[in-house]
Length: 145
Image (tube, rainbow, N blue to C red):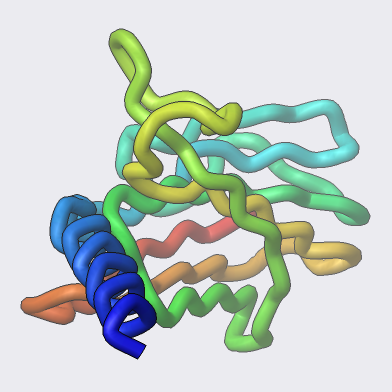
């Protein structure tokens, strides 16, 4: 019995020490629309903070790429008020910039890809709330022509 308690205590101590050595989650610090791509052949970089696309993107399959730095807990994306689904891919800091994590490195954010389907000409909005204090809600939007 004493041997079982000692083994249990050792495992518990190891588990606690592993958890305490993990880095805390980074607060959400930025959300940014990077690119809009469409079947019309246009791939437009919109990361300069503009309010609308220069190119006229045509449906179907308009894709919007959003970068999130830090950790969020409630991502929401809409196009003219209608929810749109997307997929997210973790990104890591490597060298001079952020790249898709390949199983190595520390995740510092996510790249979201949203497919607007047959929708065109309207407001795309993305928002998320930080996973850790101060629980800031960040948002970005772009009018897609």
